[in-house]
Length: 322
Image 1 (cartoon, rainbow, N blue to C red):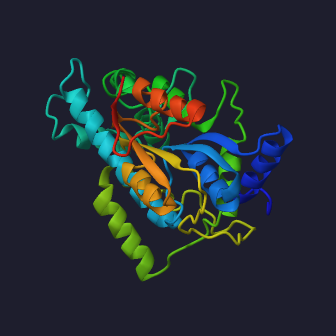
Image 2: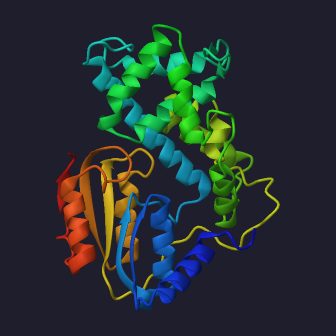
């Protein structure tokens, strides 16, 4: 467990760089991969080549701060989806865009007491249903039609099969009930990265109050799980790594990519990381969904040109979603 941290992985990545004979590291990292890339830039600033960090995390935030801001991102995305759904036909959330988000949240929370069942006899709990919905919010506008259809089956027909399929996909569960190692790796790596802060007493109450204010819909069914994800309080290994502002003295410019409607890594994190890295430029995708490279040909063009030719995108560049 002491050797699964992101800093250790950054060191492993430098071994790979040397093994293939590259003098510097050229790298495209997305989501968590932006933290890996940031730590590489901090650990090996003289070996930074062309680094692109898409869907930036917030290395300087504590676990609780990080999770509250992320929950707020999903809250905003949920409202955007619900409002869009209200303007479509059919929409299981009704035609009132203002009331649609609450209607969806009430349905999902209601599964805590009255869960759905599937054709194979499995139970669709509130937690599983929320997981399924959140998983489609990652996909942005391109995933909204599918989510409308899934919710229609669940809310109108009372069939939770498709909703549970979404949760299974997110949780790495196959059709035989076996799970992949991603959830275990998630806990081990994040706890090794220093996600062990645990507010108590007044701090905990303040965190719960802040969470309820910023993400009342998505966090209501399990606010404690929202705050402690992963829950490292009982983890047997205590890391020396702590949340901190990344200090990189790399001479090469780094390209940070952010999406204005990113639910999982809010756009403000991309802005923050750009300013903290110092020698960095921010490239922006206007739209919904997590990460930008796969959702915008404009972003891909700018990133590919930088990686291949070294041409840095102009500061303040905005791209539309395809």
